Every structure is written in C-alpha cells, then in structure tokens.
Length: 201
Image (cartoon, rainbow, N blue to C red):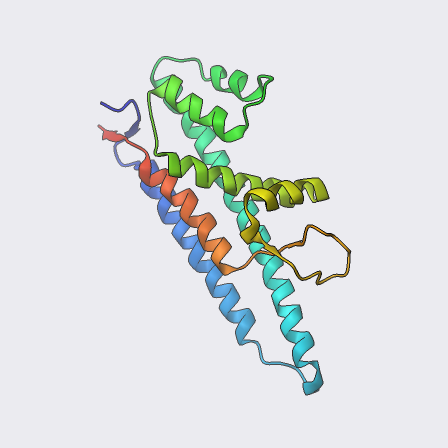
C-alpha cells in the first residue's frame, strides 16, 4: 500500500495536473495572439518582424520553462515534507538530504527522498524527463557558456546553429519553441500522474 495519502476533498496530484494544463493552454493562447498580430507598415520589415516574433516567443518559452520548474519544485517539496511528517519522519530529513555535500544532483536527491523516505518508486522515464527540464531551467538561470555547452552535449535539440544575435557563441544558441514548452508541461504532468496515492477520509 502506498504511503502517500491526501485528505478527502484534496486530491493534490489531480489539482496540480489541472493547473499545469491550464498554464499550458494559457501560454499557447498567448503565442496565438502574438502570431495573429498584424504586421506594421512598411512591408520591407516583414522578415525583420518574423525574426523579432521568434525572439519574443523564445523569451516567453524560457519564462514558461523556468516557471514550470519553480512551481513543480515548490509543490513537490511542500508535499514531500507533509508526507514525511504524515509517515512519522521529521521533515527536516529532506532539508538535510537536499543540502548534503556530494555529487548527487537535485533530481537524484529527490528520487532518493521518495524511495527511502516514502517507499515510492516512479518510472525511470519520469525522472529522466525531470532531470532534463531542471537542467534547461538551470542553464537559462546561469546564462553561462559552460552551462550551455553541457546542456548541448546532453540535449542538442534545444539549440539552433544560428548565431541570431552575433555573440559568437560556438555552442550555438539555446532556442526554445512551443514544442519545448509542451515537453516541459508534459514532464511535470507525468510526475504527478505517476504518483501512487490514496485519498483518505
């Protein structure tokens, strides 16, 4: 029997999935409106406007991805602390595990917390997709060439060979699009869908 339990009337995982889907639909609507904006005269700016629209969308998708990671992290840590307490484990155990020195990254530590603290195992694909998502968000936040190079080696599909801003980065430009935004939402949704839990009275 799973050790995850939510109070009656509070299907926490389902609520998270509903919110993710709402945000994804909202972001898609924003993009639709951007793309439906009539071009201004004169017409010789058409190519320039197309480039500018892509740059604006890239900025929007970067924010979408970072927000999804931050919101997921906040919700999952709150849930983890609550569930540890519910199972008689001091929630400070997670804080110690999260901050402990060592090679393990954020996702590996979280995976260990679910496994060791709550006896919850999730599919490998769920953890891999979350690891990718977190690395992209971290790369955006750090903004360093080293972070981009590391991300490109692991996940080249986030990069365009076009040096759109002429900054001479040989690693290529980290360029996000609608597919990346959908992938981010799907990774977070898959986490909540994979959680084994019960709702108790």
